[in-house]
Amino acid sequence: MLGDKILAMLKDEISQIEYERYIKNLSFDEEASKVDQAVFNAPNLFIANWVKTKYKEKLQQLFELETGIETEVIIRSSKKSVQKIQKQMASQPPSNTSTKINPTYTFENFVVGSSNQFAYSAAESVAKKPGVTYNPLFIYGGVGLGKTHLLHAIGNYNIKQNRVVIYATIEQFMNDFTYHLRNKTIEKFREKYRDCDILLIDDIQFLSGKERTQEEFFHTFNELHNEHKQIVLTSDKPPKKIAGLEERLKSRFEWGLIADIQPPELETKIAIIKKKCELNGINLDDEIVNYLAANMDSNIREIEGVILKLNAYSTLVNQQITMDLAKNVLGEQKREQQKNISLKDIVDVVSSELNIKPSEIKSRSRNRQIVNARRIVIYLARTLTPNSMPQLAQFFGMKDHTSVSHAMKKVKEMIEQDENFKLKIEELAHKIKSHASSEE
Ligand code: ADP
Ligand code: MG
Image 1 (cartoon, rainbow, N blue to C red):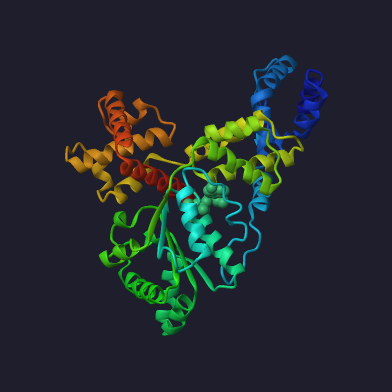
Image 2: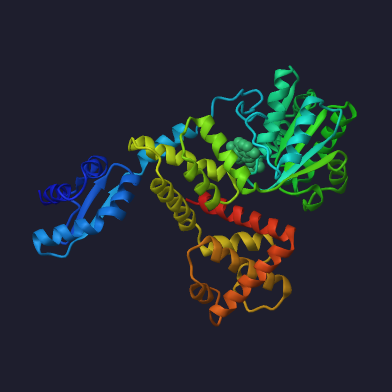
């Protein structure tokens, strides 16, 4: 077959190692091919990408040489195999179902740097003397910075001390509450959340606007606090900044200690990557660790995802993790993230979060709030999607790209000057990303 003949020709031109590793795994898809289009199937995305970047042109030349017809070469992949391996690797060890606490989220496995030192110490002190030092402890910070990890670390430590620990996200608390309310078993619910030594509640910001749950949580809080039982809460923002939260709860959340976690500096990021590699039995050269730390933002969960993906690829092709591979995977990750976000996602999320109508974003209104929202949308569109400034100008019905560039400049200035604004933008970006991925 022509395709096989071409592959044999390529074999003569490249090293045996390269042939064995990549080209040998390709199969010519005769049915899908046409006179001027040759389709090859690769066993996975990685090999497909590799062949595309390194050999596609060469293959096209060989086809033309052989047939005299200008031929386009297409490399397809079955994505499944990579995803499957990744899933296997990412699956956490079984957690104790009664407490839902992840046994690997311990103090020992938490890397301490100046960005999280304060929260770490506070968590440790509360874990060692629950109900005595700070009550409640309120930990807040951006996405993927280790809040849940610290919460579980407090839990793990105290399970070992045979204390009764309850961990739940505020959403679970809320669901439990509605369930027992409906079933007229509210006493059971109260027993569950009040008969404990330590109550750990994750992502308390979602209490916002939920009045009945707030009322119930208020009583749970008071009862535990009166009995000197430890309460630890996490949130993406400090109590004051949680909109739609009753004042009496806000003030109670401030009774104890409020500790923030900041995005890690480069050094801490490097140390965290090394720790994750060690825990997962993955070998990464320092050069690659540094590259990942410098080129990814501070969301540790995402960094972890990339490490696992790298490892999955390298297992698949039975090859050491090289710098080329790291660059390839990181690039792919970024492209995939961008690909999934549409301008509509951005408009939808920002307008709903800032309480204005989507149509107002694209309008010519000079209302301050709307102008501000429009700028934010443009900034996020430029940073989260591959659209150019002229393309954005066209989408938003602006005269030309200078208006886009002006909006970008304004937002960048505000980010530099106002820490809360910066947090808000990060939060919006996160919401847009999860909004986009939930629509797939
Ligand atoms: P958050 O709850 O703040 O969104 P998580 O606690 O879920 O973030 O952390 C996301 C991932 O990053 C987890 O796998 C966690 O173990 C890891 N992580 C975050 N900070 C650290 C750290 N300082 N040391 C080790 N792992 C960390
Ligand atoms: Mg969390």
